[in-house]
Image 1 (cartoon, helix red, strand yellow):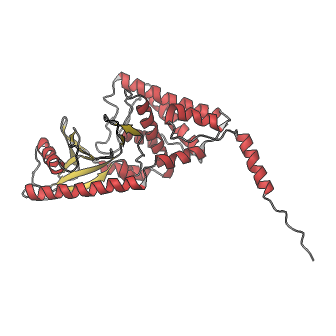
Image 2: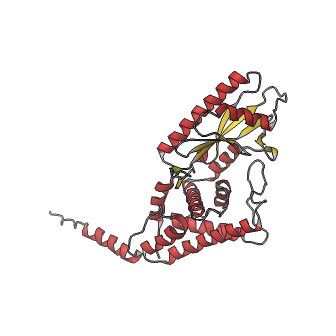
Image 3: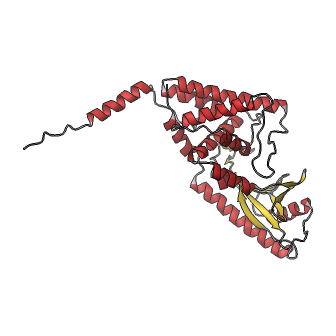
Length: 333
């Protein structure tokens, strides 16, 4: 049986967001924050002024390097992002809450000339797109008291506290869990790139599933395989297809609005992942084992294993150790 812990670790170094891209995101966030602050100070000095809180995978350190995609003009882009919450905090307990569309419009106006591409008005945020493909999402929150509310353009005000989820994850996680989250996100990216019509769960939902079904092991290949197996087993118990949000709004089922087709597609795709992980485990040749994961689940970013089997590899390692052993000279009286 092939143990692919080494290949998974190489894979992790490939999919972990590079420091240069982290710096790009932080630089973009900093410049946008200043632009928004300046716009509100100049144009709305008598209204609540914005503050900011980072949120999402960047704050949890689980962002993955993106797969290269081409735009309509054939330009190669790497799509990666950062979420930066824009907060309007009520300090004097008076109700200065603006209409949802008003705050969305104001934030849009504040950033509309920041890049060559016009911002996108999404239901949950204003998205600013940069030339290399990365973007910054700006969800808008109003806070009076203890619980922030998200300004959702189609669903109204919704209780939402993303930093609370970040704290939940950081408390629950460890270095291996962070690696497993990146593996499952990279899997999602490849499967979606391979079939653009396949709508898999968000990184947020996959993160919850990894944490709740985590199986610890010294080898990442075993930990990942058994964690996704447990995920599948849990989700396929009758009437148990759910992903429960652990923080505000606590108890919400993230999968509540999944259609039967989307549910079936996710479970079928997850089953194929478990099947190929099992095939890789049972295959003695490292190269063949890695090909199950390269061809069907992770793409060519997953490293090729050596064209040897585990028994041969262990024998070679033992031979190397024996040949490097220097017999001590006998002690002379």
